[in-house]
Length: 287
Image (cartoon, rainbow, N blue to C red; front, side, top):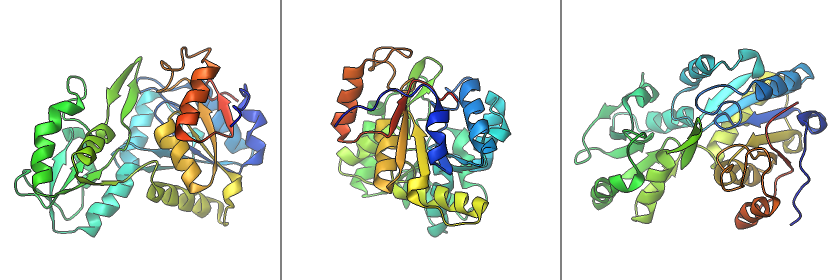
């Protein structure tokens, strides 16, 4: 597979697409502040007739994500809609109405369950588990959860992973996400249902949102996914049958050598490891 040449401007790629399914964390913001360049690029894409759906593995409902984006300084005119893995998780929980859940994650994620027919229970009594993150992602690591996960596995509990990301940027650091806990549970033999990228349900929801906004059926070759993760964004886009624009200055920045001048050999290596190649590569999303 040949590595696509670096693209300096989104404006050279954008005309081929009607819809952009854009990742949030690592592209639109870094967990601390918004990317003004990315916001500008998305606004210009919309001004040219494009539709932007932010597609995120945030384990919270879209309205909560919207308020968070407001706090980071992401302008609402940069996107048309938001679809989160928290939204998909709510669908799964609603389908299990009346069952009890053991929640692994911080209290700030409890809004995911708001208004649903669900009871919270300890690990020893719950019908299934939902993992939205670590209880304290500032101090904990996945292996701290091994004993707990072994107890869940002994009861053969299903785990719903509300955020399949393994790590995410927070400023200039990487912190663990729910995907790291879910992956460990799966290696222990546990059953995991992943609500977000790279799995199909979140893409189905995002495309449905775009089609509702445009009031027309959208061909897959007119849809572009944008993201910074090979594991979730590139893999998910390829499985869904849509093109992908890879942003290097995200979670892979360190292994690629530098944010401004990523190493081409390292880039080829991570794409080869996934046996996938993006349609285009950019350092940052810039119009």
